[in-house]
Image (cartoon, rainbow, N blue to C red):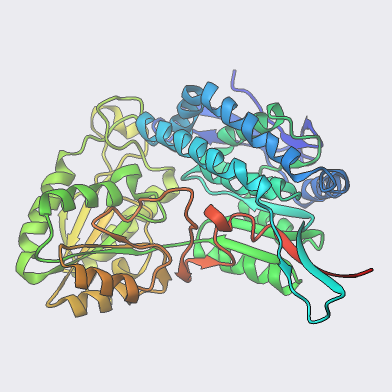
Length: 483
């Protein structure tokens, strides 16, 4: 019998007031329901916020290093449950078990890096103009905050947001993606076992529009950290900031990789496969626009098509699989819609562009890695994020044109250039309009000790992770003292 899971409020697992539930489905087999989850609404959010507000009065008074002890315990729990967590991620997201293990490991690494931040919640001492005045700043928590996580890295991003929020002294109302609710149950269990007191973290499951709107509009929510689509993030940001709250959002990307004539094509194509095809392109920093000189475009396309066709698509637990299924039917249909539009716009489908149904794959949402050539800047496939393993190849006549094309986007998250020309590499780094960039490295490469975020419509507010992780979750108080 399929299990029913509950909201987590004030340290208790409770039913939604509506009494309604929704299923989480295994994308590799749509007939396999992983569990039923609470279909919550505004009333449930209100209760969670009231509980978190009461808990804040106690949690915020606890010494910061003591709050940080939670993360040290969390690291051990993640290590102990690594295989179990990866198994749930593969079942619920569809990514290969190898990549799921990678997500768990990245989460462990992030907590190892971040666990020391509890002793680095520093202010400043600043000389006063008056010799009898001692002036300094302290950083204080905000209050009750909202965390809204996506489906593509449900364990990692959920924990990356919650951890700094609570270490800073805030209390949290957490809204996971509906199609990754099961792994979010594990997130709560991990924090609970790590010693987080009742009411400090509360989780509400349900429709994104309903719960997100309730969190965004609530006057007691002092800040919201969101990862998801640009359309939703910008709308949520307006709601939060219009009432005086703080907003942090990591949103869409249409990331460009430039290949120059002197690049090592063997290594470069391998990197493009990693950044553009693996995890089904469901990484916000993945390569979706490949910009190449006309002089080498035929060779690049041929090599990329060969690499795409060589990938094995299957159930994520198949040790030979390079990719599992895409997340759900909606994302499958969006992929097929973009493929059809690209063909109608005149792009050339070099490979892929279809749903895979052979050998039992028809039970899930499996798609072929896809390459389009003859893409221009007017096409939808050039402009819009698809969140699927689709690479659009754009041909140019010079490095200068390549840079112009790369910057011709409403997004500005990640980018890469492949070249041995140091001067062009440095010029690219200086002039590319993205928050993260790379040279001869896949566009989705990251390490947790560095700040993460984009420009333009890709991000709002302070950066996540690294040395900036606590900035969003605190506010400064300036103190002047005279004896």
